[in-house]
Image (tube, rainbow, N blue to C red; front, top):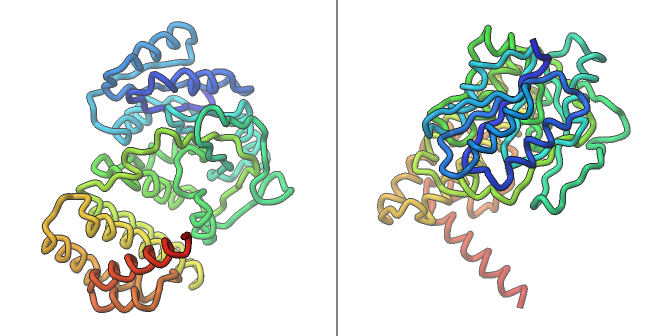
Length: 339
């Protein structure tokens, strides 16, 4: 049995895939299996995968119809033989001590099932940084209670899948899987479900060992999906419910409500900017429906967000026209200042 299973969903990544795979195979810790899950790529990605499988027995290739990254990761989980699981995106890169940093942390904290690490966000492959910069301070490890989850969430450490070491038995025994019907936020919900079952303590490895490459992140992250409203409700409900279950202090719980507020706000902005090509009447109706929902009213009431008083009045009155009007005035004022 390998110590770690590394799961990589692949879709049309031929330009970047070799860089990703090479960074995995060149790890200083080599007791792992690499599961490449091709998601019906239309380029030569599958050929790249098979070529590496012939070269290195640690590489295993799986194929599935085009069903999205969640299905691909679930196929990886169904076939993972390792004691632990790591996720990597096919257009990112790992520093050579990525796996060994987790292994060392596990040896130092054998009872902890939540090992997280830092990461660095880079604009493209030309700016790859192989140094192991520290994230917080000068300690090698930080032990954090999950009640501080929202503090880490605000610093973008909770959301990704790929900066965490998962114990495979916990995943399998609790049947934790990606939500196949979600195209946004499925990583957040998977992480919440795992953290709920794996214990209250998080060990944070104070190194940036994962390189997140931004150059191809234009798809789901920045596009307005037709089911974005459903995604927002699902993510927010899960987030708030788990924060309450874990009995977060009031100040930290207010951060969870603020996160919910900003997610709803982003959703309404996408609707009102007509990214779905709706009639003006339909746009107003959908925004009003969100603003009248109990989830949004709670976020508006309890969240520690920052918003202009006029916009807040618009939200309270369930009038996105007021919110949008202020937004236009603010942008116009900002534009004049630049002149």
